[in-house]
Length: 138
Image 1 (tube, helix red, strand yellow):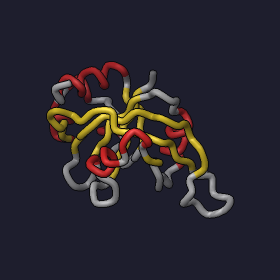
Image 2 (tube, rainbow, N blue to C red):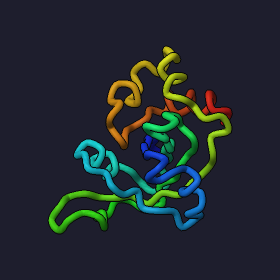
Image 3 (tube, helix red, strand yellow):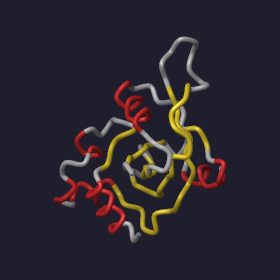
């Protein structure tokens, strides 16, 4: 299993909306960065991802499960290479983990969330995953 972090502005798509999508989940749309797209293309069914509220909140609020691997983004224009994956809410983070908390944890100094702060879909190492889950009370 691989681990990821996926960012969304809560005004565009929030954790609460993701939870309301239920077990059928929802497509993770709107990715328009090639590195983020390549990360979507690496995701496998069953992988887990942190759901991160960007801009407002700046915190990890839940865990997603990848339920369908990459396929064309229905919002892309004809001929554009963009893709989506389908995700469902797996569990809320009992205590949201803030960006400030990640930045102050020395063991997370190399986390993509810090090093590539503008990347909307990013990998998370197994060690980072375990530590962030512990920080969030999971």
